[in-house]
Image 1 (cartoon, rainbow, N blue to C red):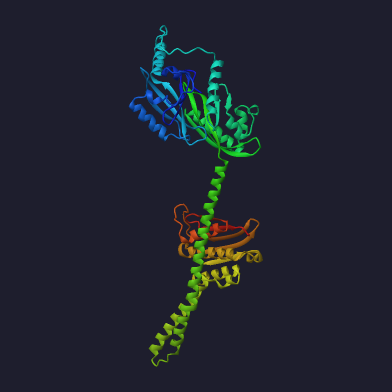
Image 2 (cartoon, helix red, strand yellow):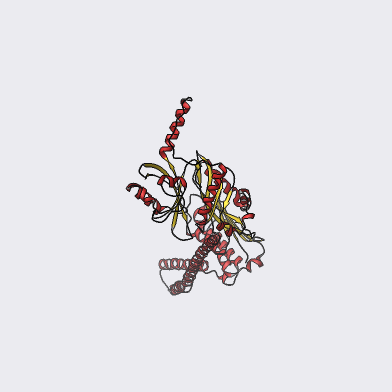
Length: 486
């Protein structure tokens, strides 16, 4: 896990107690190698400033946070400026965090760099540097030691831990990881084996993220993807880790994997609940609007209209001798007649009589007739399969009727159109309502939708349909609505 070039490595808890230290760090602190007791704390080797800096990092660093980097002065009789890379990890499955810290001696690195530059400028001069004595071991022995430490450390945690030696291609996966995916150690192979078990839809994205981390010399990597377990089922996992570099070359990746399939499923259920809640709210709003329309329509027809009709009746009974007075009475009577007609028309729009008898096509034709009378539009309504259209549920027919009303109202108010085309047809995909006008048009990306258009989209969504509004300046406007038949 640590660099063979001389990185310090330790695992500490939030209080700074050292749970594990590698040989190089133990030699620096003049302690025995291996796991240490709780009374052995890194805080004993820090000055006040270093202590408070470290505590701040340990308080804020989480397992899913990027690595923290800090320069700390370590005292053991002499002072060593060490740059620490600190990563939070969950240990023993508890909520208490532990921290994996990888350190590099800053002064030694600077000294080595200066010596290297001097030797480059003066090939005949060799600079001898003072280093701590390190027992010489073969590369194979060093790798064995590193893997032994990794095995020990992975045994401390219930997390699914993995390590990838990017130089040799070797992979290590701890027991918790193998248990999670359901494989025995002898069945688990190299990195290609792992990649081949990533879902094809995710594989390319995972590779892109790894390439990006290496190319940009980043230290933290993560990806959520679907992985094929031993039982053949793909499950969602969250894979994250950090990269160890030597001379700007990635030599190891160390990380952990968490099964988040249940979390992912819960998130989907929560999203579905939110959508259902939105639909319920829209349904309630439209239901209240419909009740209000019915109430206003009935009041206009049964109350206000009757009052006006009675007033006109009494007015017609007046017998006036003067011709001028008769002209005035006739004018008032005509206005009242017009008002009665307008109120009747409005009440029929609010409470369409034909829909109460479950006739959608007739209701739309009545709307078209009203448009032709009041305005100079050339309006045309076509449809197919009338019998199947009339078999739609009453709520869906009412929604389609209201959509026609809303869009016709928008056309009358804003379009300055000459022609209006309405088509209602039954197709294999569902029932399709198409409304077109050749008016001014507008930029759909710049216009704020009003109550009418918002109501249209809300009604369509209520029945799990779709609506497409297409328009541009000078090109008119078209609305296409698709709803399922059942």
